[in-house]
Image (spheres, rainbow, N blue to C red):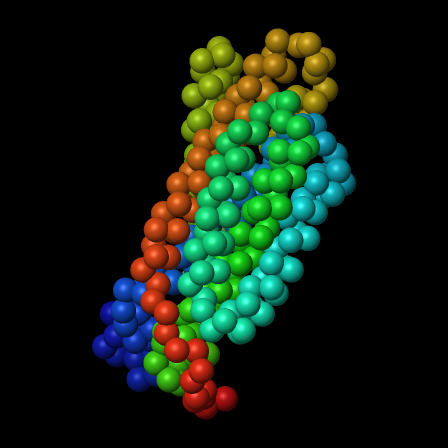
Amino acid sequence: TLTYECFLATLPFLRLSLFQNIGSVAAYTCGVFQGLVIYGQLYYIPFYFLSVKGYTPIQTGLVLLPVTATLVPGSIATGAIVTRTKNYRYPIWIGWVLTTLASGLSILWDVDTPASLWATTLVLLGFGHGSVLNAQNFATQAMCKPGEEGLAASMYGFLRQFGMALGVAIGTAAFQNTMSLKLGWEGLSPDIASQSEAFIVELLQLPDNSTLKIQALEAYVFGFHGAYTVFTGISGLAFLLSLLIKQEEMDRQICTEH
């Protein structure tokens, strides 16, 4: 596809000019990383509450309010700040710091994690992702050539969606491998890891003082720690990459054929 777009296509949809400098490449790469992290977290955070905490689906939905209720307002506030200050780098950096911090705090979650800790983590996560989501979109359009603003916005959206496709797969690999390791240490079948979603029904039916339930919960927690560690590392890497994003003039003439 890349070869065809570069040498044969008369009107390529993949404009290599969008990746004209290291700042643009960093911004688009951070878009992939954000899609990966946010989708992975929005899968494995509810999974944690359903399995380890034993919450019902409705309770789990309510638990997610701290992140869902802050992500959109955080994104709106970021848009207003960038518009007023004409600077998108600081919101990107702050957003990735908050996302990395929240991802790191989620590694502390275990069976007895109090609501104060997980709620604080989710609030930070919502503001972090909300800030990054909007500010990076500003960055890609500011760094592109005149007339390619629409292409830059669509490319950023595409790469973020591409990252989302990777999020659950990478998180699943980390979760199942680390959980299988813990199950082996506890003398339990590693097959539980590959059927972890289905095993929740059986897990919640076990008595609280059951040795099997205690060991299984410890394995789940260990697996979640593995997935959250991966998300933390990727978030930290994205923050380092975001330092390469250059500040460009935002007051520019918009040239478009549409």
